[in-house]
Length: 230
Image (cartoon, rainbow, N blue to C red; front, side, top):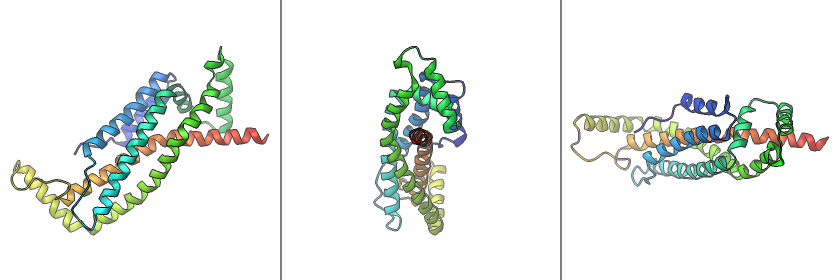
């Protein structure tokens, strides 16, 4: 199976999108690159349903379902990123700002705008509405991912002997370059569990990526509530 995107690589992609990159092209390129690679790796792992292993079959197929749903959320996110790339770049540049600092940054930016269309404040309001559906779906999936991640860890320990035996079979067959029954996620518990845990990791990385905007929207909501209270 292909090696997963490591967190450091994901972080570097996001840093490139924020540090010194205030143009829409930079935000679009790096955010979409991370999401695109995660999507590619999900596709490589596959979405085949498991018909074997009664004791863990439900878990394995729930993880497949979560992965497919997360892929759809990622697609929605990419669409919004493409439509609001300039807003994403601005918000990422302000990712460590307090609500007060964010307010000041928005005002400073808009004071320098020569037309209404250039102002970032109205664009942020539009983006907040557009990302709301994505954020809600992402948060729901994140909670499910946590549950299944814990369940997967538990099952790995409970089926340790079976997984070790299946691992040995898989590795021996690879060393012999074939021979015997082809090892798949439907006849080798090691491959099935490895795929499930990889799927959980990919879904988690995607959720973390999307949550950057989700957290920023919460900061904007807090700012808006503060302004309305005055």
